[in-house]
Image (cartoon, rainbow, N blue to C red; front, side):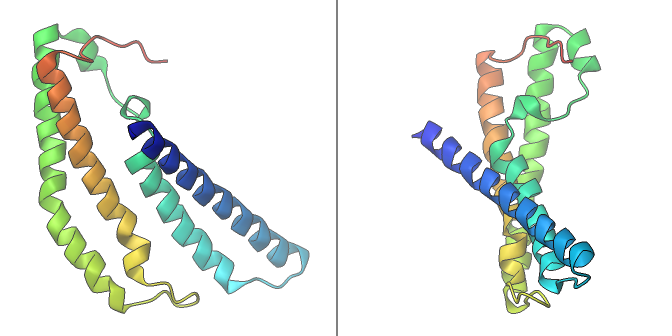
Length: 159
């Protein structure tokens, strides 16, 4: 079940990126090939960019692939890493959980506004930020559980 959800998330992320690429090519062709810029392509590209970045961070890119500064992590012992993982996950997960209600209120409030050209509700444009916050809470809870069990605390050599 979890694997199918990950495949669906990857498929959606890939589809969003492909759509962004197609819109970008249309934009370049219309602007420089025909000297007729299309206003909808600018807006669609911005909306798709927001979705690609936030959806990718929330659901596609695994935690181990995110950029980290692990100089301190690699220089401390196992127990210190366990404390650092739990404290860091509590901080990220706690702040994300605290931000969800206000973020949802804002996103829901923005439903009354639409984008100037396409008329897409700003609620749908900003929705992936709420998804990102929810994903951070889930990932943090998972990381805390793993840290308590002693999983994933080894020093890593990243290149």
